[in-house]
Length: 214
Image (cartoon, rainbow, N blue to C red):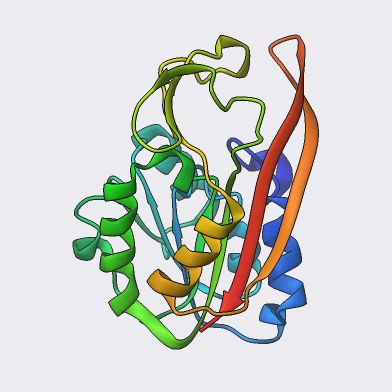
């Protein structure tokens, strides 16, 4: 693994990706991991350090270029949308599916397409990690409403002005884990925090973290 000073972009994984990794005992084995919305590979670097086979998908070519630098030539990295044409990128069966902070940017139709494409490529006892925003998040209602709990955000202070955002209830997310991935009793952790962005304190960011095994 590269020294931290040589890494491009974010240098550390999501803290709940780390918790899931160690609390699920994934440091004691190897396998195949798929992250959709992998960015510069900061989450996948944790898996790479423990010898896992890496597949990352992201819509941003610049982020994927950084991921290639950070993860090396053996990582399978694909430039694709999270909700279309995924099947051509998948080479499972995957032992872990990571969906951190990507589901909120996808429409209901797109999420259904994502799940339908990923499910056949999951191992028989696959782990799934999902993190996304709840309806009590600061951003909810700040913008033009489009569909069920969806908005085109008008929040320049968070750097997300003009982006589509879908917010969820905990019940909706539990149903997705069960119906789309076959996980009946996931760990569910509410994460509420303040953040400093663009010179402002953004109060009450609200996420739900879910993980479980099929």
